[in-house]
Length: 214
Image 1 (cartoon, rainbow, N blue to C red):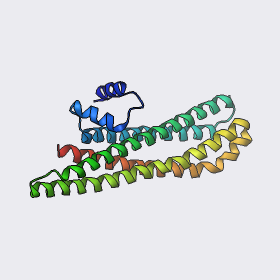
Image 2: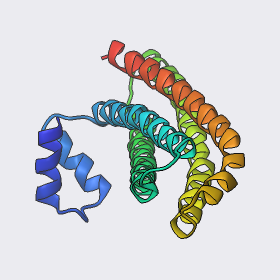
Image 3: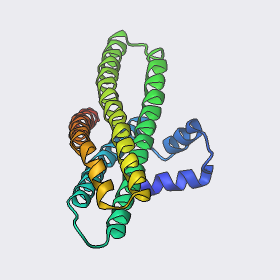
Image 4: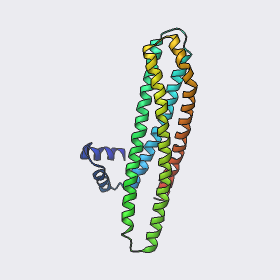
């Protein structure tokens, strides 16, 4: 699937529109529902990786706060690297959620349009009910994904302030100054991880539901 996607993107060019992408994928026998499942998996995996990255950054800051003697510059550089990786992780999560939402909108729009093609009223009603159920489940999933996404920004802002302050005040007094923010940052990271766990669990449930109806 990933190799096929890469080939399609290459053939369309990176600026190719989504509709052209979906149409090309369908020519290869890949429907929007399959693309949606794959993108939900990608978003889930990005959140799993993001959880670990935020934990690593918090741990790095904790180690720096406990650091006595030695090379503070090296510890600062390690913390800055973890912060930059956390920014990248957050951007990846947001990008993948956006891609999930994009293909879901295309899938549900197409599904609604195709309801008008039914001649059999019973089959139409069954398909419509399935659409309503799937849209509802997806709506709840997207809400949890976005909730977790929003919680990344307060954490990144505190991390950024701490890293920036240490950049120009790399001494024991400066380390003491940011100690007061650490407890709050710990709580924010715990809350973020909790929200991500909810989104990950809902992602797995949504994937299972979509695959069981194949």
